[in-house]
Length: 414
Ligand code: ADP
Image 1 (cartoon, helix red, strand yellow):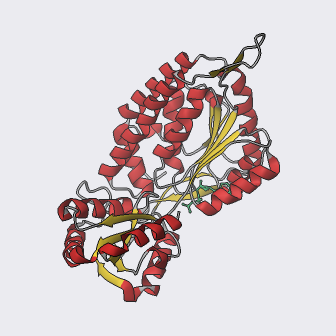
Image 2 (cartoon, helix red, strand yellow):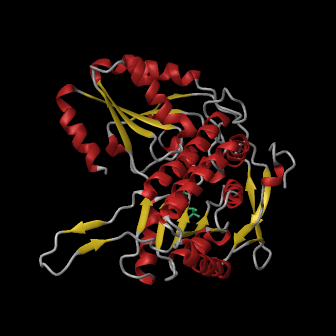
Image 3 (cartoon, protein in one colour):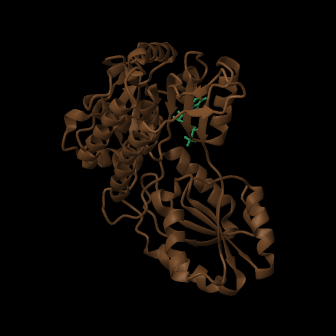
C-alpha cells in the first residue's frame, strides 16, 4: 500500500475482498492496481475476484438473508441511522480516499460523504413506511391485502464518479427493505468501497448481509448479473453496460427480476432573454465543470437566446478563466483530473476532432489525467452524437421564435 495515503485512521483501509465474515484475496492470488488519477501513481493493489468467488459471495448473501429478512423495519431503521452517523464520523478519511482514488477535489469529496450518509437516514425513514395496500374485495367472503417483502439478494454495481454515494444509494435501501447485498465497485475505486463496507460492518450490519467483490465488470459483474440466485440488480453506469446487464438478466434470471439502472444522457439548459445572466453563468459553469464534468447530471448542451448570447458567452469564458484546475488535494481547486488515461485520451481525441468548434479553453496541468475545460460552439443538441463524460460544454444559440423547436430537439434526445 502507498504510505502516502494521508488517513487519520490508516488501519481502517482494507485492500481485500469481503465474502461472508472474512476479508479475502482472490482464489488465484491475482490483483490489480488502483491509481491516483492526478499523478498516475499506484495507490494500492486489490484482489481481482473471479466468477467462482462471486458465486460464493452470492451463496453467503443467500444464507444471511434468512435471518436479516426476519428483522423488523424498526430494527433495521435504527441500524441505518447508526450507519449514517458512522460515515459522518469518518467524513475526513472517507473524503481523502475519494480524492486519492477518484481525483475529486477534496471539498467536493467531503460533500459526497455527507450525500452518501444522507441515504442511510432517508431509507431508515422510508423503510419504516414500506406499507402494503388493502384492496376493495369484489366478494363479501374475501379480504385483499398486500404486504411488501424483501426481494432477496441484491447485486449493487457501481461507478467511479460517486464512488461512495452510489454504494450508499444502493446498499441503504436494500438493507432497509430486508435484502442482503453483494457490491461490485468500479475498477477504478475499490478502496473507498472497502473502507465503507468495513465501517458499515463495524456499525452492526451482519457480516454476510454485505459482501464486497472488487474486480472487472466483465467477470464479477457478468457473474452477478447472470446468476439465478440474484433477485434484483441496482446499477449506475453507462447505457451500453445497462443493456448488457438487461440481456444477461433476461437470459438467466427469473422473469420480472427487477433491474434498476441509472445511466447517462445529454443534459440541456435553455437561457432566454429573461434570465439573470450572473445567476445563469454561475450555475452553468458549476454544472458543466464540477467533478471535471464527470457526472451524469452535468450540463452538456447550453442554448442561449441570440439577443443575449454575446454577453452570456463572454461571461462564461470569464468564469471559466477563474476556474482553478489542478491538485484535487488543494481546497481551492475547482476542477481535478479525469478518472484515467483512457478517459483523458477519449476526451482529447474528441476535442481534437472538433477543434474548429472550440470557443474557449483554459489552462490545465500537463502531467496526470487533466483536461482543460472546454467551451464548444454547436448548432444544437443534434451535433452531439454521444455524451462526452468530461469538462466539455457545448453552446448553441437560438432565436426567440425557435424556442419550440429547441425544446422538441432536446426532448427527442431523451
Ligand atoms: P463507465 O463507462 O462509467 O466506466 P461502466 O458502465 O463501464 O461505466 O461501469 C459501471 C460499472 O459496471 C462498473 O462497476 C463496471 O465494472 C460494471 N460493468 C462493466 N461491464 C459490466 C458487465 N458486462 N456486467 C456487469 N457489470 C459491468
